[in-house]
Amino acid sequence: MSLSDDFNARFAEVFAPLGFRKRARGYFFRKVEPGVQAGLFMPLSHDVETGESGVIPSVGVRHDPVELLLKKYFLDKQFAKSTNLTLAAPLYAPEPGAQTVWYMGNAADVARTVDEFVSLYEQRGVPFVERYADPLEVCRTLRADLEWDGGPRSAAGLVLAALHDPAGGGAELAADAVKALGAGAVPRGERLAGLLLALAEETELELTAEQAASLRALAGRS
Image 1 (cartoon, rainbow, N blue to C red):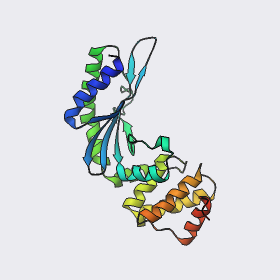
Image 2 (image 1 turned 60 degrees about the vertical axis):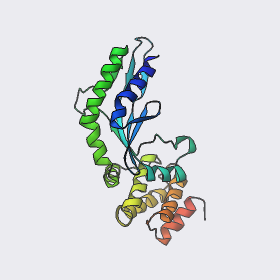
Image 3 (image 1 turned 180 degrees about the horizontal axis):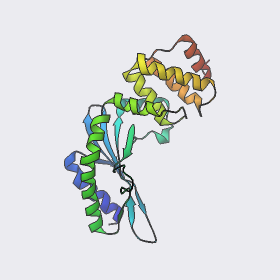
């Protein structure tokens, strides 16, 4: 068994009592509540010279209604995966000098690393998941540094606002997005325009007639 296989097997075994199940290589999920999942991402890299493998752990939450709408109206097929996380963060202390990469060279290292990740998850992962199981908390966090860059992060913030605060944050973000799209400042703007039009149909988000006309033109539907 390779070191990578050993790590994934050990991780799955140790985290199973916490409710996590492996979904894909390096991805482990557990159900928090209907429509919300906690996710742990454990990507391994291998150093040929030292023979060691390194892992940088992350924790995240997946809000299924958000990801389903992104899959249907925004993401390219190859990027619409069941392992996508709506919001994620490193699973380690943010203090300067804190360990960010765990290196493993043998089975003993694997066992030690997985045990350390259990402690990290209890200390930092559990509070993260408890906070961001609330979709409004995710929305507030995404809005804090939202940029209309054509990426899935800004699109997720828009979907969350449309689903959970359509008359407030949803309307504000829609107006901001239409303005940015009109200025030609959004890469692949037709995809975001199409998403906005779809949200107006599938959620309680309301667009003005002027906004809808502008979006239809941008999406090539006029």
